[in-house]
Image (tube, rainbow, N blue to C red; front, top):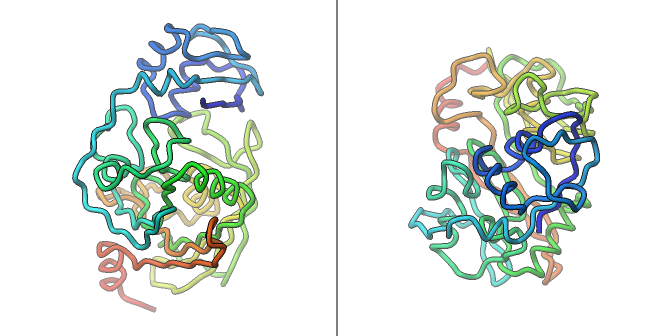
Length: 298
């Protein structure tokens, strides 16, 4: 069962769900018509206008109406694996789980081809998926093999016991050696596919930035998060005037198909079963590294 709480006011139910779930508005309307989505425990019309803090419940039947996810032979870069969990180096361009318009080429399809030992807490379309990174963000992502481990890892993420470090190339030369961006993030009212810094219907978001190297027109930085909001690093960097290089959404520059130069570089955590501290890093993808090698340094 999926439970959501509306953080917006006076917005249609179908529109809200289509922007907060990975399903099309048309598909969500069909599910609402089948009474598979409830608002405050009552069946609701697609046109229902939500209020802030309305409870939206999607029953297990919702997930079961999805087409069966097909295992697909997609290469996996496995950084670590044991009987409880996996750490994957996800390439830029690979979506984490199936959604509207993409049911075949995702990390989930690859995982299902590789193993049948995946948690199912997240539902039929998200086996093993404890957390997500954006399609065009590369790097480390964690996968749970059992429901017990999934629940323990989810709690670790919730209470910030899992530490993640990102590498990002910013447009512009950032003058300070470090900074903390403390600015709430919510959905952009003008563009439902974007997030933005706003005081309206938002959640607190804190990003710590450290400069690693300066170039004539760019800055390589390390970012760590106190919170895990959608597009958080991308939104915060754009907000301070240094958007991530090649970001197709938050930068004004034309972007290549590679997408934003943002890489989940390091992950440190206590293993939920063995209780050993574990730490993993993975190198920058070749396209990212080659770009750095070919720009003139200060």
